[in-house]
Image (cartoon, rainbow, N blue to C red; front, side):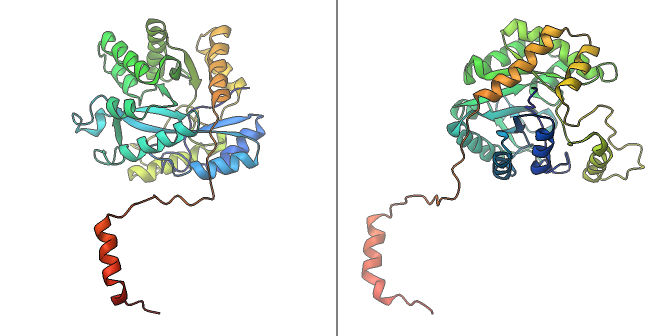
Length: 312
């Protein structure tokens, strides 16, 4: 059974629609036993997602999609910040991911949070990374015709940080005949997969649960961009971004010309990742820091405590 590893909910504000609860219900109706949350820049929906998924017997896979650069201090233009998708493998990875998200939101450029290789290396414990798509760091490099050697170097760098088995390249399940960018990036993924010995996963990167909700999604995009639905310049995505089942994924990729074994291997990698995830979020507890006051503060309190006035 195909497992989605890359998706966005209503917590990707005005970039996607669909509450986590509705997305989980859709996944369950399709017979899926796990699904991921990869909202942009933060993890606001992750606890509710975790609880609702558990109630429905669905394994929650918790991610975040963050801006990614090589050097945090060298980037001042938000348009040059590509994305990277990160997943927590277990409880330690979940806390690492929260720290990465907090760091990214302290380092943003014009509302575009970002991390770099340095902080990723520091907080990489039990984290999986998926890279590509046209909004990713490497996807943008491909579309800008940057040197292959440079792209290979970055892939190897990320693999060195996260360990080889924790880095994947993402094939995009969309109609390549109407999306030239996807065709170009998918072909390059296969090239760099062989060059760097990196496994591939597959996704259609959904932004709304059901096919008939595409217009509502486009309305959210128009609101975000400050346009009306009748404005010709508003975003009008041609591709299909609903929650696809395995049959739809296979049909699209077969139409694109990929063979049965390739598609089966990519879907199998999705499922292997899902099986490896074991996050148990500890809820309903008080998490106050154990802060030791300096001795002089304690002495000052003992000296003046009788002078303190407590209002009733």
